[in-house]
Amino acid sequence: MGKYFTGHIPDPPAVVARRKGFHILKAKRGLGVAPLPLKTNNRAKLLTALGGPGILNQKDTGSCVGHAIASAITLRFALMGKPIPLVSPVGVYDVARMISRSPNADGSLPPLSDDGTEPNLAYSGLAEWGACSAATWGDYPATSATINDEPTPQDMMLTADFKLSGAYFLDGTAGDQYLRDLMTALAAAYPLSYALAASNNTFQGYTGGVLGPMDDAVDHENYLIDYEWDGSNLSSLIVYGTNSWSEGWGESDVVGIGGGMYRANRQFIAKYSDSTAVVDVSAIGSEQ
Image (cartoon, rainbow, N blue to C red; front, side):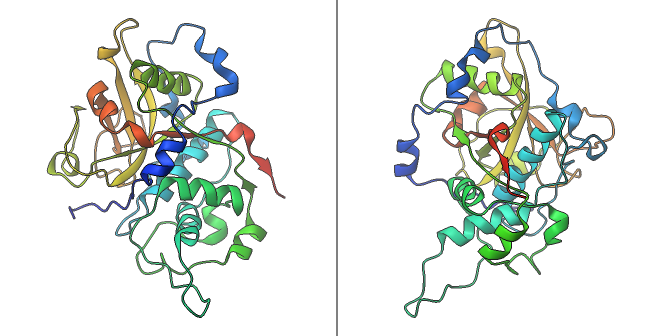
């Protein structure tokens, strides 16, 4: 473990196999008909004053999956012009960990443990129990002292602001089409959750520049928000990612945000393509 904490557990191969070919916005492929813009600027809405999540800090917890997905949902609402309070990062983490637990012999459930989770479990939990704001559960900033003080599923359902109706994984085996799907999503203002290798010195010590592929194990979740390219050659593609290690890590070109972001090239993106997913919050229905 490096200086910063991770916690992403890759989805099982059987889960990955079932979602192959399941593309972003499958029913709205017309979004990709028009020429893709040379760059996007979704990160302009990252600021909390504009309804964005800001740069979160998971601190000494393994809750990166919860922080990435909660941030992506919050930013998506801001980009839609319908800002909501910060979605609870620990709440998203909790629903995933609850689903993954196996009952004890007496039928009781073991306590939660802060050792990470799988993204598909977080999306399943959001669909089953819903999510609410960080203010409702009072669990942000995250801390290892309270990360396992779980609400019950009943608590979640009673306090949920919404339930998730749709989440789509991009097909990481589709080559250039995968990259175009990713760009299509970002051009339509859909942030994407994304997993990568983060315990190596290159990523742990990143302060700026364009990252290439790294050979370490995939162990961390964050989300992608923007891209830029030359309009013809996908080898020129650069994506902008947002992390949950505070503004003291990484870089930023957003006025009012000092750090917490990174840039990466096509090889970096392709290396970690199997876990890229988007939450279609236009399909989220209020439960209140």
